[in-house]
Amino acid sequence: SQQGEEDPQALSIQEGENATMNCSYKTSINNLQWYRQNSGRGLVHLILIRSNEREKHSGRLRVTLDTSKKSSSLLITASRAADTASYFCATPQAGGTSYGKLTFGQGTILTVHP
Amino acid sequence: DAGITQSPRHKVTETGTPVTLRCHQTENHRYMYWYRQDPGHGLRLIHYSYGVKDTDKGEVSDGYSVSRSKTEDFLLTLESATSSQTSVYFCATGGNYNEQFFGPGTRLTVL
Image (cartoon, rainbow over all chains, first blue to last red; front, top):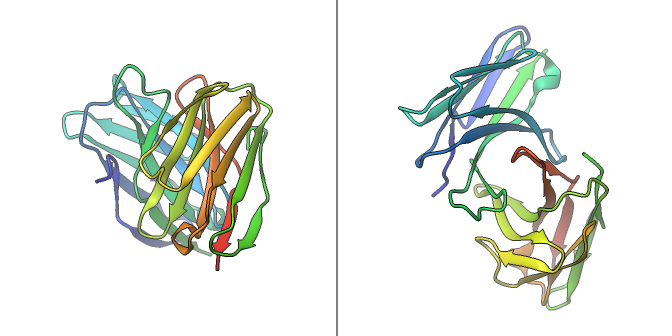
């Protein structure tokens, strides 16, 4: 099963509203990452939060991490139609020789209506 | 896309034919990865490379092979394409802080 699982699977909102997506994971991690994928494109790295951080901001993005609950959330404030995309969380695979491998969740499809 | 290109971008082929997809990066990243993305399965790692001539299997490696003769190039070969390998294939490289950078993808259809 996936290390990271996003919730909800799909989210539909109006422009200007906030969008919140959640990610749960199973094993201990040293960081968690969020990626965006626009339709027909490759994934784009958005933000990385380390295990010793509880919250991180980047523009309109706010990420939280609760290691005790093994969960993270991505909040997009004041959403725009251009934020319409799939959003994935990703966690590093454990082990000293992980070679940077990540395990991706199945993603949340966000639709922002103008 | 951090200087990552994939070729071809689209390909239609027939069952049983060999297919090679190419990934080229200009970032001098040591780690490179091949994923496939399918509805309901998300992104799954096929093979990865941790240096020139150093490669290993991912979670869905059956029917695929890879080669990396230069830092900048990572080739994925489907030895004998099957319809189950119809998918979108993404190449990625590993950055210095564990993040990954993705190419634009190759849409492969096996008839």
